Length: 212
Image 1 (cartoon, one colour):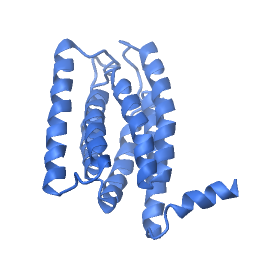
Image 2 (cartoon, rainbow, N blue to C red):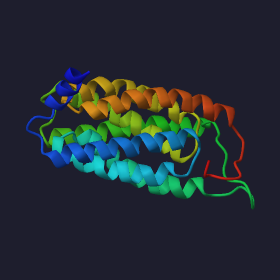
Image 3 (tube, rainbow, N blue to C red):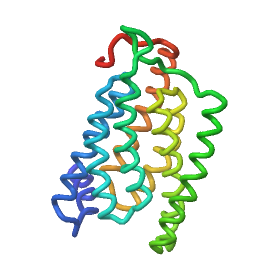
Image 4 (cartoon, rainbow, N blue to C red):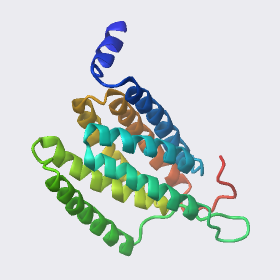
């Protein structure tokens, strides 16, 4: 077991200690955020704000511009989602989990394509298309943008986007040396699967509380 830990920490050789500590803090809060989301708990957003705020800085340090934009977007969408989740359909019930409408599916496609174009321009302007990870990063950014938008609207299908994006991100982060984050996304893939099942059971049910 000690050899495993030695190998993991060896990947951080030359990286400032404070960056490693910040990554660990971000990992913990990201995990908490997804667990709260699975439970349809409003704490998904304050924990998510902490996680994404830290992650934005770390990813800028590593030069992963696409993922940095994801987390900056998450930060903003967490504030919007916090507001949307606390809206009520009547005096005692909050908005329910629903499926995406035909119109929302069209907007999802437009958001996906628009994000790819936007991130591609950012990478091109910064001469970042010199490695294959940049192309993968562009795709995952678009996937997560749609997933976060659908989560803020409490749409069941948000979990499908998280699962796909997480599966792609695990090897990408491992390759880039972000071992803790890679392990996090592996865990998030599993949680997202159970999140989908949990939300499906609560489909169209208006909750009485958001602190579960």
